[in-house]
Image 1 (spheres, rainbow, N blue to C red):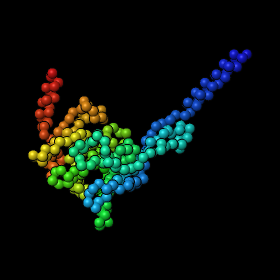
Image 2: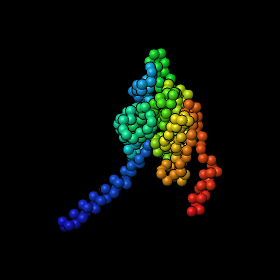
Image 3: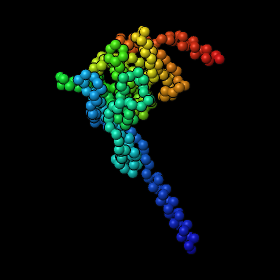
Image 4: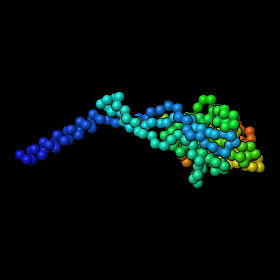
Length: 254
C-alpha cells in the first residue's frame, strides 16, 4: 500500500511539473525605449564648449508569458547614457589626445551629440538626423584640430542593437563638431589608421564581410584607403578592384 501511495505521488508531481512547463514558455525579446535621454556634459578641453550625449536606452525583455500575452517583464538597465574617457591601454584611436567611449553600447544608444557654447549660450547638434555614435577622439597633431568618430548606421546582424559588431564607419569633423564628413563606407568595418606626416595623409584599414555571415572576423577580407587629413572626404581605395580580383584568382589556383 505504501509503495502505491509513493508511486501515485510521484506521478502527480511529474504531471504537475509537465503542465507548468507547457503553460509557461518564455520568449526572449528585445524592445527599444525611445525616451529622449540627454547625458551629463563633458568638458573635453575644447574652448568654451561642453558636449552632451543624446540618445535612448535598449530594454531587453526577460520573457513574454504564454498565459497572458500582456504580461511582459523587462530587465532593469544599469549604468547611464554617457561617454567615458578611455584610460585603458586598449584604445580604438591610439594617436588621439583623448578618446571618449560609450562603454555601455549594448545598453545605451547614443544617437547624437549636442555642443553647448558657454560664452554665447547657443546649442547645436552634431547631425541633423541621427547616427549611432560609439566613440569620439580629439586630435590636435595635424596642424588643424579635428574630432574622429566611430559611427554605425546599419544593424548588420539584425539584433536591434547598433554596436561594434556592426559595420563601424570613420567620420571626421572640425574641433567644434562642424563639417562632419564620412570617411569610410557604411558596409565595411573601420579598423585602424596610420598617419604619415610627410604627406599629411592617413592610411585607413577596414574589414569587408566577404563571407556574408553578418560578422567581421579575421578571416574576412581587408581593404585600405587613403585620405589627405586636411581635406576630409571619402577615402580613396589604393588597390584597384581588378588587382584584387587577380590576386583572389591566384589564391584559388594554389
